[in-house]
Length: 222
Image 1 (spheres, helix red, strand yellow):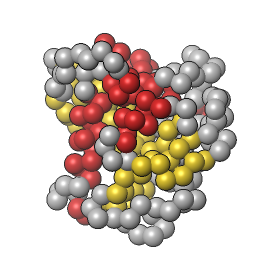
Image 2 (cartoon, helix red, strand yellow):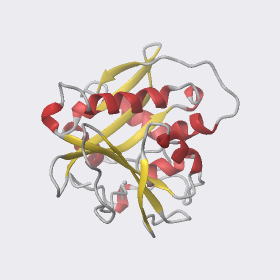
Image 3 (cartoon, rainbow, N blue to C red):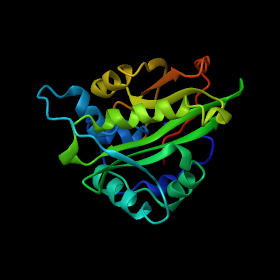
Image 4 (spheres, rainbow, N blue to C red):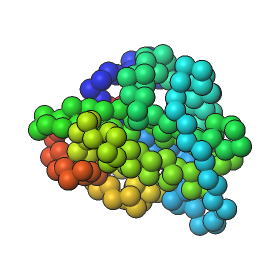
């Protein structure tokens, strides 16, 4: 699921050797579709929505983000991943409920050959007890509004993008509800999961034109 840096393949070792097509597994190996986010889209039984307080990522609370990622992803993110976040603090947020970190969204800015920037969603996570409560939707909405805000106009964000495993229908439904569209499919994108193919989803913002097919690079955090 970028050009600011990549995490080495050796850094992605932990728990499951093979990921099932639920959200969580999809998110890590693609980049942003967490099992919590997906679950909220595919759930047939509705739970009472919860409103989260959105806070900045800091050196004091990055440890909470690391614990959240350990609890929600089937891989371990090493320090190189977190070092990328310090370069993109304007687009990384934690979601709090009852003063506890229960969710997070981490994005990064990327240059586009045709000009302007793309905001790439790296990870989206929600603790299992808080899934299907509308929390993932709040975080995605925050990222979109942030990219379109007057405050971040200087970033020249023209599109928001992410990668999703082709078999992850619930994640596709979730992101399409925000206006994301499949712009291309990359075969054999994933190394350790099946099917190995991914869809690239993009959403135009600020009047921009999304990148054409073939403009994507391998962004899987390996």
